[in-house]
Length: 430
Ligand SMILES: O=P(O)(O)OC[C@H]1O[C@H](O)[C@H](O)[C@@H](O)[C@@H]1O
Image (cartoon, rainbow, N blue to C red; front, side):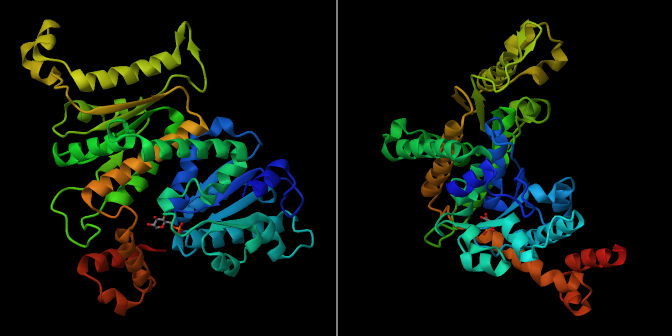
């Protein structure tokens, strides 16, 4: 993977018309998308080879249409990333992208006598554990990078699933990213429980869920580059621990996985923090912040990063200590609004700070949350590494295709709600 990344970065690997690659487009979904897109966004300042990345995941044709609309086919490399190479969304998008590529290269007179197969070989590579299926798709297995089938999709960003990252950022940055994972793995493996951060944070989460009744968990990065981190964590945590049967097959009689969600600060402050501060629900929140900004900026005399961090410090302080009735009254507040101005405080938050958002720190952060997720799974007795809940919807979708295509018999076999929705579609589709 590193050797290939270097060939693309240096311009030795070109498109079919000899132009160097300027855009890599990762086609994948779930674990084959969320990790790479999150890390790409997080480490943007480290992109140093003049290559940018895009990510196509949704089977909604809008996704592929929007992502390729302004692309130059001659300088684009598609990476079809799928652990199983059997995922409907990814294979459909890959075929649509292949059609787009061949049409666009033809229109640009860029094929220069080369066959469609030769063009695909130059513009499509794959990452998968199923190399036979890669070959069946028409991608040269020489241009496919494998990993091991015991790596769960949501735990795979540090495998060859990160090929787009190795190309954009280079092998050295990718190695630093991996070194961060390793450091956190070693900490988790060796630190005594009372000093073991994933153990402590996992136990805190269990405490908040099972003893304080928390149903959700906010993740609030005070760094714009981490804007996809909450979305990434949703798959990691909710696909891992959203289970109601234990690993031994018995049903649990307690709550398991929380709903993870969040937005970067300070945007969330002006949207949903109201509920975190004064709502009736307990929402444990993780705050992430960095001492050094990626873009030092002044507004007159004011360091903008300091203003930004002041918000981070203030929010965690307000959650912890709130504002008492006496303090509200002492401000001369009119009696009829005193209660509305009280902040109970004692709302749990965890602050994680690092000097700077580097590849290594990002690797540490991801591994931290992987191990937290594992700790919770162990306490709850569930298997954090399966995902049967995803399967039913996939199967039903395929079963419904004939009804959507107009097969009345299949339509009539459906429940009344589904049948009337499909009926609406059939009447309105032009
Ligand atoms: O990488 P793939 O095999 O295409 O799988 C993509 C995704 O498929 C399913 O939705 C699984 O539940 C996810 O865990 C996985 O990440």
